[in-house]
Length: 283
Image (cartoon, rainbow, N blue to C red; front, side, top):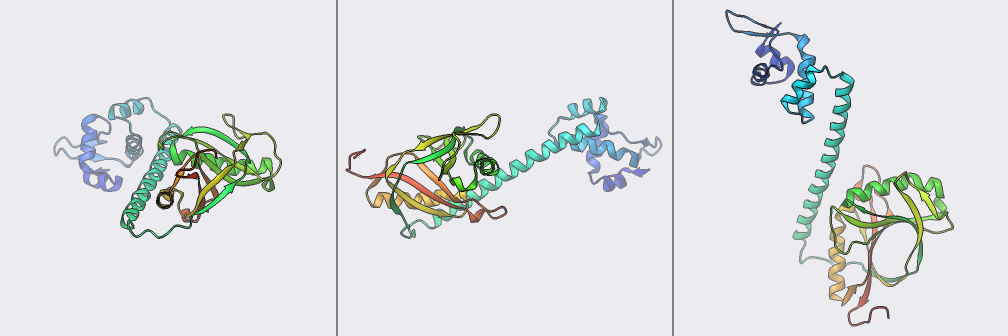
């Protein structure tokens, strides 16, 4: 048996926490010397302590933990709960890293203000294209990324790689909303393909037509997809300086998807339908 200080070192928890759990009746010493008042713990109590700590990490209250311990929740049930919590934490970390990169990118954009070089903007005509796509309201970039990853994993095997062009995202929302973004996502088709492809029970890609655009202002963004706002800023400055205005839905053509483990490897062509200021729309 171990005195409380020794047990705290073995369990890697503070003596104060052990005393608190004792007061709450969650984990009492295996033996208390009535003459000295010393608390003694047994190694056999480590599994119960670990259960308490795991359930606490899952976000349960101490009252809920007490109830679960009394109901003898199985190890498999706790492992399942812990696996779920692990997945939630990993997702949260990914989202926080994305926010951090966005902040860093915004800071770099502020630092480079007034030092922006002339962007390599290309004006071109884009013909009508067949588009195998689905339109949904998604929770910003994370939702779009999950959809693109699903499409890339499923569609080429069902349609054939030779029939598919680049994955393209059409932003239909009249205003950017990071929580609810109305987008159309799919493959531009370079050959004949079926009229629909079932992506999952909830999603079916439908073949439609992307309309032709007489004048499209384009700029190639190389690097993280989460940092396209920097290229959009360069494109916006160019349009303003050269008297062009946006006249339709923005398109993002994923010319190269990011290689796993290297987010900087992405290549995205930003496409904005434009007309010269003073020019009548539709002319």
